[in-house]
Image (cartoon, rainbow, N blue to C red; front, top):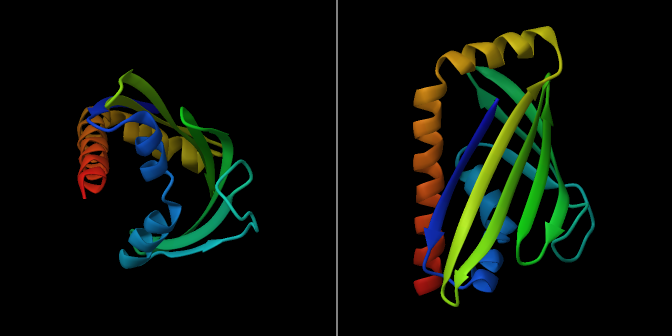
Length: 153
């Protein structure tokens, strides 16, 4: 199951990439929402090989999630693989300079089930694809607005 959308921001590509790479802010945001997040690599700067372990409660059950950065091409692309019980995910953010001060951000996310129960879950998600796609696009639009706001500040 794949989700994809794009947003244009009034931010130069280099600065947009730097704002997107504020991984400490994402960790703090997840922790504020009740997740436990910790870095499990020892890289000193962002790049391929960054890894996180996270756990959170969802539908009354504790879930564990592992994330790994697999592509980091500054200032155009970031790719992160995620894995949890039965589902692997690929998240990709691509940036394209439209002009000196404007950048297009393309965000894709794909879920791949690895066992039968996960396949049933993904199949049920496909039934709600339209509403999930709308929510996904709204979240990416909020993400883009947040990048613009942080750039102005």
